[in-house]
Length: 79
Image (tube, rainbow, N blue to C red):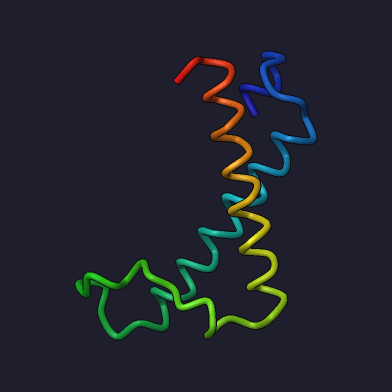
């Protein structure tokens, strides 16, 4: 949001990044809530085959948005 407010990122792109972040976190938290223990090293791993089709597609889109943001940062900051 701050990047959008500063003019460094278009508002639509910032909104997409925020929505993607919250979607991924929601999937992760649901998985953790269903897990028997959070001490397990796999507590943050999610098997996409266990997701509903819509969640799988949305997760792919969230990862595409993250990849696009990384590419933008690499170009903008010569990383």
